[in-house]
Amino acid sequence: MAVNKNALIRYKILDRCFSNPGKRYFIEDLVEECNKQLMEIDPNSKGIQKRQLFEDIKYMESAEGWSAEIEKVAFGKKKYYRYADKNFSINNQPLNAAEIEQLHSAMDIISRFKGMPQFEWINEFTPKLEQAFTLDAHVMPIISFDNNEYLKGVEYISELFHAVLYKKVLHITYQPFTSGTPRYFVIHPYYLKQYNNRWFLFGHNEQMEKLTNLALDRITLIEEQNSIYHENDEYDFNEYFEDIIGVTKPDDGVVEKVILKFSELSLPYILSKPLHGSQKSIRTEGEQLISIEVMINYELESLLLSFGDRVSVSEPQHLQDKIKMRLQTAIEQYPTIKD
Image (cartoon, rainbow, N blue to C red; front, side, top):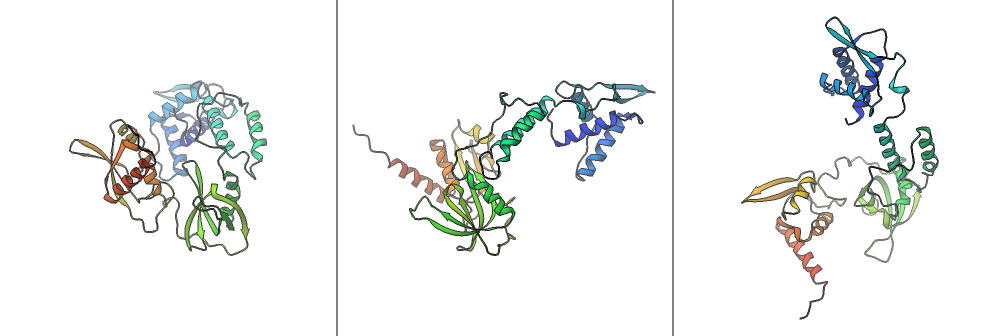
């Protein structure tokens, strides 16, 4: 059984009911108690049914759970539930396998910040957590996260995070890939985002008078500037990226339907891992095509080019022409083979 947030809440409620010697809890009472608590936490909760509760009890009794001895005591034609040991509680038990693995996963996420300024406490915190919960620091992991600890620019994440949090204006020295001369920006930082193993800072750019993003691996210096912070009252970053792939939103960009034809070998991969949330399958003339509705930007072009000969653009025409031109330019980088 997946140990999610609501499941843990239900286990705590059941634990309290099974530990209460002053009241008999029949299955209907347990369902009512769980649903009452869940509704208090989330008014939109649909609650649970008896079947879910039986699964919860089974999990609590299992070795994967807490090996709880739960008695079903006959009372008339019905049965009520209680712990066989009145002193038993899941709060008094050692962590089970699922909880230990969740802690390991959480620690793995936290450890990604090791070495960053203002995150030195992690080096002391991790061993204490391992000791407190008797976790084996050298246990063979069963989950890993895509992370490049040698990525340039990650040393700025802590400083930028606090600049966003405390609304500090920054003077940033920036070295573009396309120029040998650094540029200087006054940025009012709003948001940090990771894409394709790179980090980007989004904020109001005073010189350009608009929202821009800067790649952290091109930043060479950050200095705090004593000026009035330009509040973000325009952009909702929960929705900002819905119409694009990547981080670049063209100033004059419009959402377009992009229709793609993938090779038979690549199609199952694309169906299982959609390119974008708007992806749909289109069946036409015996062929299965893929459509997405996005703004066309550099990241989309790069993504399509990464598939090489396994994809072709059917629509729109201007994107098809752009991809053909870039592929032709790539071919020209190779010398002609002479007979």
